[in-house]
Image (tube, rainbow, N blue to C red; front, side, top):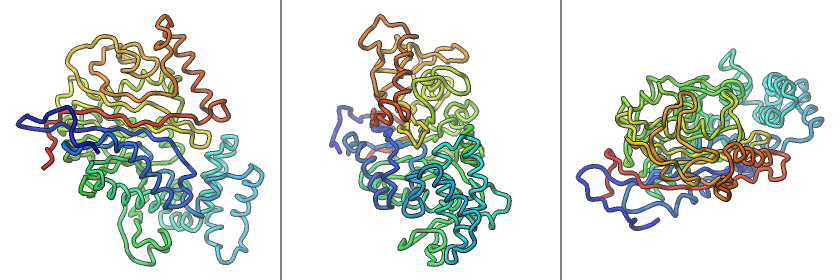
Length: 462
């Protein structure tokens, strides 16, 4: 951590805040054990460390599904981490569904049979996509707990039961590690995971039924709802807030069977780095949600994100250039019509999760009242010429204080004569190569970017 930067704090109110957005790359291998998963979290925070300061509040924003790989931890997730060939996998799934003779692990396998029936059907419908297969195999590993959830909450889907069964894995190691690292780095940290509402227990029976052997506590679901949620941890290690995603994507609904949060429950989180308005992915694109944050007095829109499609390509819904569509959130959420919202800090996941690509450019943006000159290629997102709303055509005011590099430069950097269409064509070709089994499969970049923000509601260090 640096002692002092080049900005003096000499105003009567507020403080300069060092904001860092970290877009890390998926690493399934890091989920081999809880220790290796924790080490991966430490590595990710280490990317932010060179940019943190001692003379001002620090804000570190991490990605939307940072806790997701934890579901694959240990023996229960071993098959899902390394899915076998299709024939072997189907044999395992069938065995789990029909065999009553595994006496000691009967509940685990028979319960898995009920859960996997729906999952295997979804996998077959999707031509046995590797991610669906992994989900089914994870249900086998979590079979006893999946069966318990199906009994406890009648009528829930097999996928929901699997997420509930993984509650402690999604929550405990992430919260405990972020709490420790927030103290170490004296930073406010925001990160996402999947989680129901939970209660903490130190009862040995609860730990045995829901948690990890040898752990001193466990987090247990208190109901059948599972949310895409963001956790805000303060520099003293305390959990300052939790915000559930309100506007869910098709993937949230169809693949993960998540529960939408309620807009009226979303509160601004006061922190030493200022009043944070957490907007998870699609929430930051939604005017109704952004107006709610503004009315509540948030100054910084914190956007943990994970775009599960090619970055250099067209969106599924609108068939527009993906980075252009992202302007609707990272600039659209801080337009002058919002009285209080002044900054957006967006952290973007990268890396292939099985066959699913996650890609994007993390960014830090600031509100401006006037239009700025045409952005330079390295001060905006790839394949973007101007900052306009892709639907309305209105100018989007504001500027990029920092933006993460993509796997290649926008071609206009090296050849200013190229048309926008040609630039996007070359970028799209690269994005296809990043997919499996492309020539550059999974060679995404991860990056930590930073900027200093003047925040009225921030607290100066003692």
